[in-house]
Image 1 (cartoon, rainbow, N blue to C red):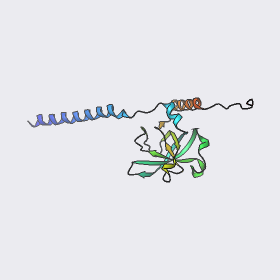
Image 2 (image 1 turned 120 degrees about the vertical axis):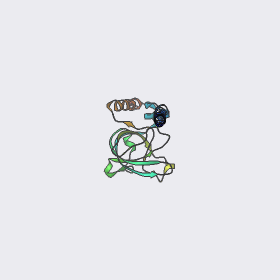
Image 3 (image 1 turned 180 degrees about the horizontal axis):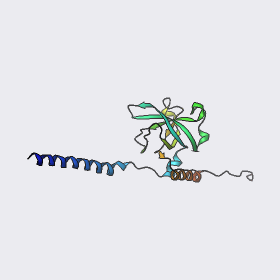
Image 4 (image 1 turned 45 degrees about the vertical axis):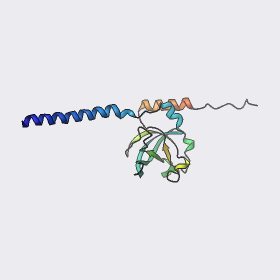
Length: 167
């Protein structure tokens, strides 16, 4: 009798684990991300960087900001002025991590990613003044991802107009 009961409990345990794994696989991808071209278009600034410090945790909204060391601007460098730059000009504060409206938005210290950001809107001031805000999901840095983002940035740029012939 005891052996039969143990088998039933073990089978029940395995069934719970299998259902949990299947549920995680089928429903975890419910967040739909916009196409890369649209994400790049909506972001005024695209940069690569490494998260150096996590700060300004908001326990009510479960959001936080990060100090990010910038390695390269792929788009919008001219929009990042002296007030936004930190620690000698090679770091920025980025907010919006944990935002439920953005699919992949969680980082740890030391993570290096491609960030799609905009300047914080005035309604977010003073808490986020001089911060950049996440605009869409983060991307891991791979050669393919960098090439795809660079291609989108190049496609969206406006060539210089030759105004010398315009009357």
